Image (cartoon, one colour):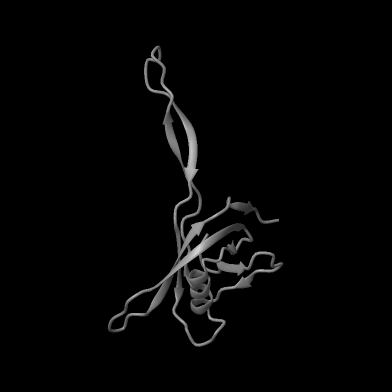
Length: 136
C-alpha cells in the first residue's frame, strides 16, 4: 500500500472532531520497540529474555510549508508548541486504518536552496498510548 492519501488531523482536548492538517508530505514509522530484558538464571544453558516495556519514539511528520493564513498547519502547530498544549491526533491511511494519540509538538522549518522546496517538520512527543482502529 502506498502512503498516498494519508491524512493527519488534530483536535484540542475535549473536542469532538478532528481538523485535517493539509500539506502532509511524509508520515513516520508507528509503534514501539520493547526493551529486551535479561532474565537468565544460573541454571540456564543460555540467556533468556522477556519483553519489557516499550519506548514510544519521537515521530516526525513532514509538511509543505505554508504560512499564508492563521489556520495554516504551520501557524496552528507553532501555537500549540508555544503554549506546550497537548493535542489529540489521528493519522488515517487510505485503507481506513487509523491511529490516535495525544502529543506535544515541536515545529522546525527546513532550509532550502535553488529549486529546493521549504518544508516543516513536526516532531511528536507522544503523551498517550497509540490507539489503533482497523478498517471496517
